[in-house]
Every structure is written in structure tokens, then in C-alpha cells.
View 1 (cartoon, helix red, strand yellow):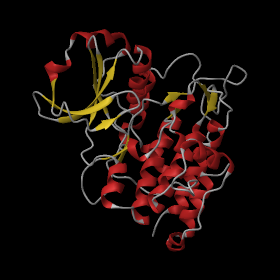
View 2 (cartoon, helix red, strand yellow):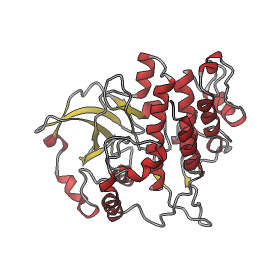
View 3 (cartoon, one colour):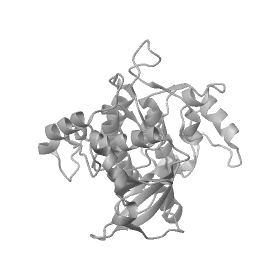
View 4 (cartoon, helix red, strand yellow):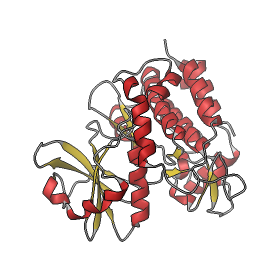
Length: 342
């Protein structure tokens, strides 16, 4: 039996969650280590049900990266001394600011994914922010695992685990839409990951099929949430330019329009927009609709341009008129409506 009822409760809890203000700093390494120590006896490879209980069992790990006071040591380690790019001319993906390529560890042969980011395009502060967020996410089962960091005069090299099944986007294009059963599994896994991020005051900000990876190329869909180039930590406090529910995100145009909520899009050109956990919940609602129906919930006209889609998102309602929805359980439709509520 599909567990839509427990997922509905979980999505509502995430949408209502108040993010704890962090003050003037990032999550510290000590906080990560304390969290890891607190949860390590509860970590497990299997995901128990109901989903909402999984947040307490998630482990937080510090993987591969030197501590804050030791970061300078990375500068003296050449990426090419440890890894060899496998397909220099054939990227396996594109991140928000970088190209993702496959590489192999020179000693172990382990295949990894390497995001190469031009140093001219992204500041050290921005890269370190993404690395810190990935570090906090640790080796959570449904979040891409950070393994190492290098840089030279031209590029940053963010080394992550390889998801051999490719992007969820490609899985849909090549093999067709997911069954309701598989969609339920994917949503459970992603809601688990988002709950974990929100518990640590992190908003992903760019959930879409291109940023969801499949661990192995098999009939079982085991997903990993990736590309944290747009993710951010909520550090605003009420009365000081932000709130416990969100943060002023300058340059919100970095978010993908098709997966952005109305409150982000309907700003009359104002890029300084308060974005909170509800933005991730909205994007998950759009994603779930697409996984089942194969099209955007607000795109009634396949020929509509981005501006028209934006108007439909801000003013319209999700469309369930297609006959295919008669074969979808009421609980699944109810979940989508809840996540896309304005």
C-alpha cells in the first residue's frame, strides 16, 4: 500500500517548520561533529517507515575535507596528483556555475564526480559556502556525498560521489514516466533529504529533475539530491532584514523559474526576495506532478514561453483535467495540491 498519508503529514511539517536563526556565522565544525556523535548509534542503511521518523536517524558526517583552520593545506595538493579525469570532452552534467565530469582516484580506482568551477566566475566565499553546506549534509543517504576539495589558479575542484544511474531527468526522458509506486519512493527519499537540510537551516533552492541523481543504473530508483550551488543557510533574525522562517536571498534569479514559487517570481523585478523552506516544498510539488503527468502543472500551453509560464505560476492553479489523473490515487493528488498551495 502506498504511504501517501505519512508523506502528506511530513510535507506539511516541513512547510510549517521555523528555521532556527544562526546569527552571524555558518554551522560550525564542532556542531557537525556533535550531531554526528549524537546520531551515529542510530544510523542505518535501511529506511524505516513512517518517513517522518527518519529525520532522527540521519547521520551527519565530515567527509574528506580538512577542518576550517586547515583549509590552506588543500592549496598544496594538486587535483591531478590524486585523480584522473576520464572524459575531459564529455561532461556528465552542468551545475549552477560549473561543469561536472567523471574522474577516477589514481590509487583506488574509485570513480567520482568532479564539479569544475572557474575561479573567475565564483568567489572563494561562494565555493566555501557550498562546501560547508555539503559538509553539514555529510553522508546522508539521499544527498550527494562530498569527498574532497582542490583548487589551482584557474579552477575549483569539488569532488563528490558518483551517481552511476545519471540524472532523474534523463531517466524520465529515456525510460518514460514513473509509476505511482516509484514516484512515492522518490518523494519519500527527497522529503527525507529536505527535512534533514531544513533541520540544519539549509534551503536547497533549486530542486528539479536535473539536480536529482540516481545512485545505480537499475530498476530500483535510489535518488541523491545534488547541486548545492544555489543552496544557502538561513541566518536572518526577525527585525534584522530576515526572519526565522526565511532569508533575504539576493539574486533570486539564480533559482529556476519553472520550479520557483509565486512569492519568488511575483516581485516586480525585485531580486532581494525572502526565501524559506516553503520554496523547497513548492519545487517538490512541481516535481511530483511532472513525474506522474510528464508536464508542468501550470503549463497548459506547450508553446508558452518562460514569461507566460511565470504568469501562470503566479496567477493560475495546477491543472488536473487530463484523464490520466483518474488513475492516480486521491491521496497523491491531495499531496500535490498541498505542496502547491499558495
